[in-house]
Amino acid sequence: MLRIIIPFIFLTSVLVACKSSKKLEPQISEDQYYIPRFPMDWVGHYEGTLNIHTPNGESNEAIMQLIINTPDAEGYFPWTIIYGENDVRRYGLEVINATNGHYRINEYNSIEMDAFLIDNHFISHFSVMGNDLIVSYEKTKLGITALFYISNLKSAVQTGGEIIAQDTIPTVTVYPVQVFQKALLKKKE
Image (cartoon, rainbow, N blue to C red; front, side, top):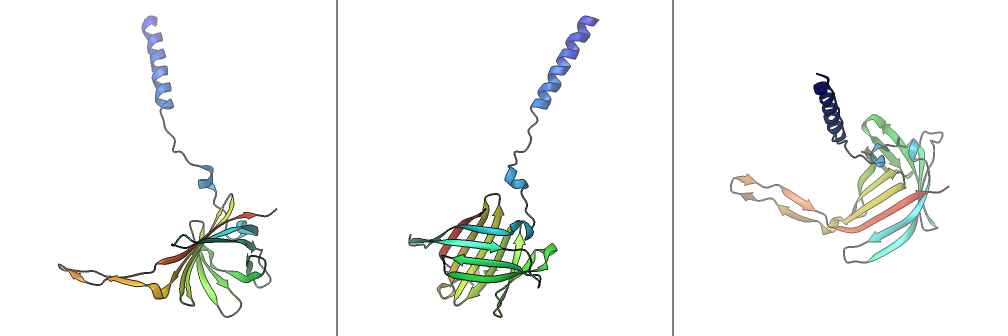
């Protein structure tokens, strides 16, 4: 009887070990767990090169800084963007509804732009002086990635708007992106 039980226990142990070793865990990178609190974990002085690209292959670059400070007496998080050495733009970040990811950038000149935090991307979309802009900032362990998509509203093209068979096709307005800008801004020590 012992001759049967010992091989059975051994075989069972081997099968259990094989089964557990075959269990595959999902591969999740460390960055997927990094979810900084906005805006407090974003506070700091960041700097990097802003790369500016156009569809015809032209490119340019400029030094860009982003400085985010703790709230001032009015409750605004000072949000300063510096291009080069002399182009300083001072704004205030206002929390409208943090639960819904709703914030506002106050330019202190009667311009206030809504912005939204969606999946660790701080995004605003606005039009100014004939241009449409989508601006996105993402906080990572490396710093803040800034992306700017700029379209000229006068270049818009309409397509669709027809009836095909029995379907009414909606009109779609297309805005060709004329400038793309990207910067990885690293935190200064």
